[in-house]
Amino acid sequence: MRIVNKLVVGAVLFLTACNGIDQAYLDSILAHRNSTNHTFFDAQTTPLDTNKLKTFTGLKFFEVNPNYKVTATLTKYADMPHFELPHSHNSSKPYKQYGKISFTLNGNNYELTVLEAVNKKEEYKNYLLICFTDLTTGTETYGGGRYLDIEIPKNNLVDIDFNLAYHPYCLYNSNYTCPIPPKENFINTRIEAGEKL
Image (cartoon, rainbow, N blue to C red; front, side, top):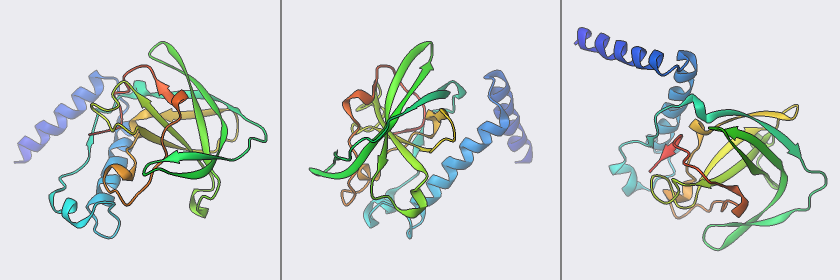
């Protein structure tokens, strides 16, 4: 068994080296995914109802790909009014457009609107939301899009890591409502990173 485990670990390290993935970066993404799965498996924190929890076998993810971690330029908007962002179940909640990010991915340029919830909880006061759709939406990933949380940056540069993209809880439980990505936040490429169906 120890020999098999060493072979498996060796194979992972070999593939990691061949793919040019920094081991510390890979470990950080895997730790994040393990933490998220733990949240789902824990009856006290899971968004799953009792029946779904009984059959839950863990979240699925695309393979970690450092090419989907990019540095974006943030253009902050000034004095934007609040608006009602459409949510699932024909509901809405107040948000404002914090700004837009511009970035290059696989040689192409993209822009996404960054949102800030108006009535957010204290623990989320320094966070912004990017919700998006792409060419995997509705097939490999949830038809309602995926999300990224980012901290409010101290300057106009912000790291965007699509390996951390996640599905909203409304996919797993109809008791939740979730923001619907703005139409302009469609990325016309396949984002094969982060959580998948």
